[in-house]
Image (cartoon, rainbow, N blue to C red; front, side):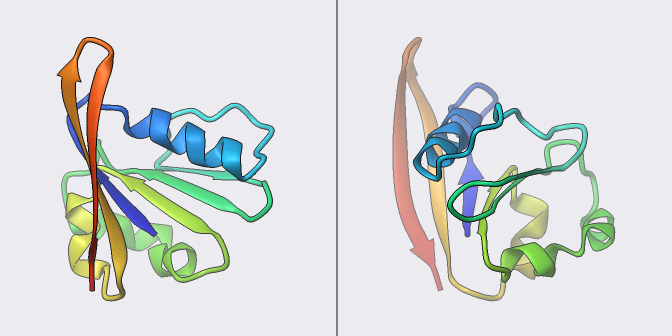
Length: 112
């Protein structure tokens, strides 16, 4: 599981597209900003969350987030700030910064 941090246009969805390509996902990868979750079939399942539009952590309850976080697939979360208190197992923190019009800096670390 990875929590993806960064500004709009920072490269989070592009990163997810790269992971999807590595997993041999055949569907077009798009940001789930309005639906909150896209599930892609590949070598293993890819769960792509986007919590940009959420205002309160209570809104996450309806998603049964734990089923995805600790399931058999890869879980990538854009705008994960509201979900952080629910992440009680180790995960990767991926931070994106815009370094220029066509340049990004990516810092990968862990928690737990």
